[in-house]
Image (tube, rainbow, N blue to C red; front, side, top):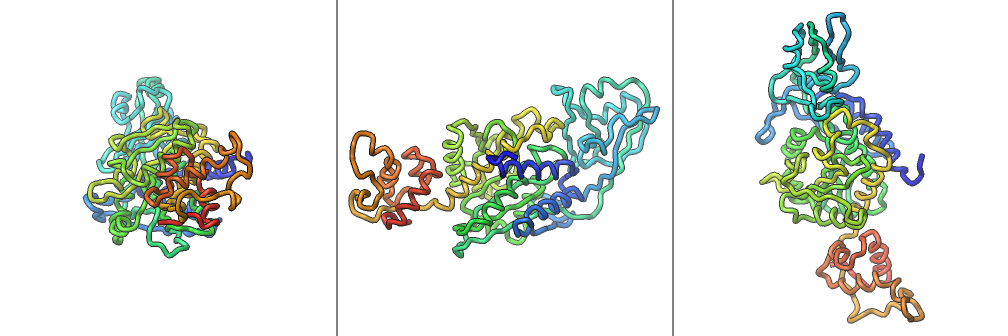
Length: 438
């Protein structure tokens, strides 16, 4: 194990654990995933609260659908050979497919089969949550290779009056503060590594980091939800929305965070929240501006629900390769080979810097009149000569803008020093009682 990417290795291993599970927006796959997350968090004495919403429940403008139970599915030829089999790859059956047991011709079979024509070697991920359909998925090349003949389509599935499940973790502030930072990720896609397994894996590692902080300025809430309907259900339950609108200072949706490629942010609706400012600041310094910014017009995950009119929560979306933007997305090519410990480590480092920055993000004000004498406090070099001032430039620049009007991220942006580098300066100035928070 590479000691430089300890957290990355742990996240990759956990993603690999939950990768095989066949998930959907309801059902046993979601519960198995939540159980795995619960077991992972228990290693650090953190409890995952399991929540449920009965099928048929009205959640704002939506209704929780019936629970989908899938046991088997395949297409076989006349000799009994399985052309595709759900037990070999769970993308072979369309999500929420109706049951079927029928022999058909090749031409009729093609009416039930979905492929990705522009990527002829992959199995696409296809769903039909709210319409009654039957469907299978295979590669375009495989479909084109099938000879004329009869084919047996079989899906053993049913819809039951069950429940939608999601999980929630709440870590309390050590300062009796009601304000909170919010994280959301989803648990509803079957075997896709970056699009599905990476978000929960990163969230678990961030929960560990936060739970071990000696002091916490904020409360932290993490939710693991089925995408769209799960986020809507969560917001609709037990006055959650009212509480979050009152107390949330920043929020982040975690999606597609395990690959080695680009870093990305999907802005909030008006791109004017603390979440936008913090994430852009951290990405600016961490990547040397080698990241992509997408407006809310390019939304696609649960940032849609959290930013919806009337909801108006400050939730930005953090990704590496953004959903819909990489070729492997929603296909069988989004596998464990597409993600890596190194990719995970980068995402973890970014979000850890976000958390640290939030914890120290006050407006600071210098307590002495005019420029403070740093030398008598051991904060300045004893001998002045050309170049000797460079080492304290960040500190003096910080002091210059610590006038009570700028928060930590404002100062970071103005003086072009990362928050990660400014925090030790803040600590030292606080120790010397040279600055105070406003």
